[in-house]
Length: 151
Image 1 (cartoon, one colour):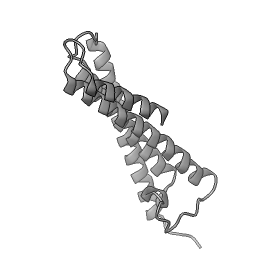
Image 2: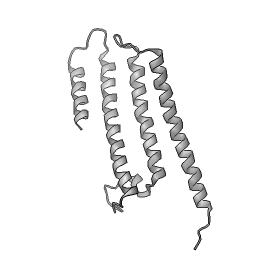
Image 3: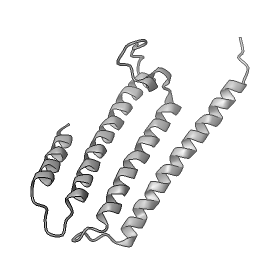
Image 4: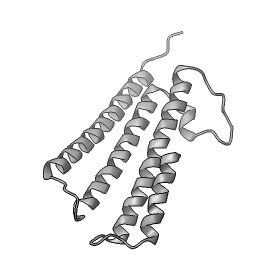
């Protein structure tokens, strides 16, 4: 929460002060909003890991039919948790990549082609990993459903 308010404070400064020479206010505000989104997504990732990990590996929370129960918690298992985490990482990586693409043209920032290329490659690895995890989980669940129950 602290980091969120720090980012919000920076956003207010950008919105109400004269921008530095050669900087576009709209771009600076967009980068500030992306920073806020990034902080919120990381906080959500942490909450997902804590609650999902506890529910999966420690004890059930018994939140059935409770108004505040997250939708995904009703059918959480290790496969679902891995896919949710992978998708959260892809989303966070997307925000960072978008910020890089916006900042590349900003004067005073030295982004090399190699640095941008590596960010794109890392993002693609995250995407491919998420797809592979989802596909593996789907194959595993199909095999589990196809096996007859033994009594």
